[in-house]
Image (cartoon, rainbow over all chains, first blue to last red; front, side):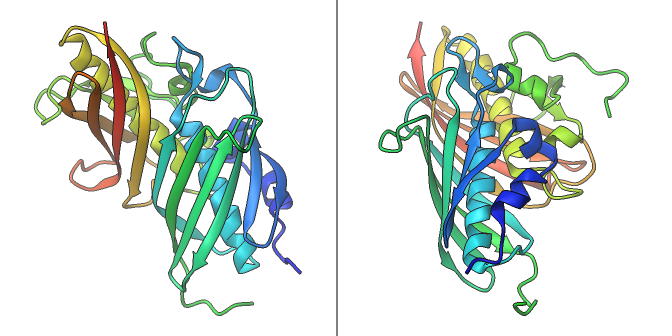
Length: 143
Length: 142
């Protein structure tokens, strides 16, 4: 039973995530999947109509955060400690990018995450990410 | 939320830089970045994450734009060419608060095929960075 509701969090999101149009797709016990719709506003390389890295990082930051909260079973404020993105290939112009973030290890203070992004075929990803988050309230007991 | 005297983003900044509201403040002549421009990202709803703080992706976007600006400047002074990102690794040191954020990039090595670039972002004091990034690019020489 999962108490945390990622779909609800994404639908009420404001700020950068909302401006990017991030939408909920699916989730499981330790992962969540979001969609970043294509928009010409997100182009980072006008010569090739390729998305900037910022939107991909934002997509994967949110997707992996959701993975952490799915695994914890509740929302806990945390801060990104680091995030590495490998750009395996450019996303195809005009296609939405799907990002799946997974939390593979939780400690009291640190959450370890990984994920992949693709533009239609999960077996042909556009990006691979790995990162860590610091729990902002490590002393707070579970509810 | 905008500064009354900003320099509008020049045409060579991509659409995502406009979404972030980036302004080119000038070149960091005194710093180690040489002629690399300093980019400013105003605090605005479009770059917010959790309430009161910048979103990590928006900070990463600013760092990427600063890195690209530094690399384009270095590349144009060295024969010109195109660039393709290989990877980016972002370290977040402090939460981004309700202030303008500045960033600049430094090309640590510009080779024939690969460029190594660093960028850092700060609010107020450049010696107290809120985030930094290390980025590697493929270079396709003209």
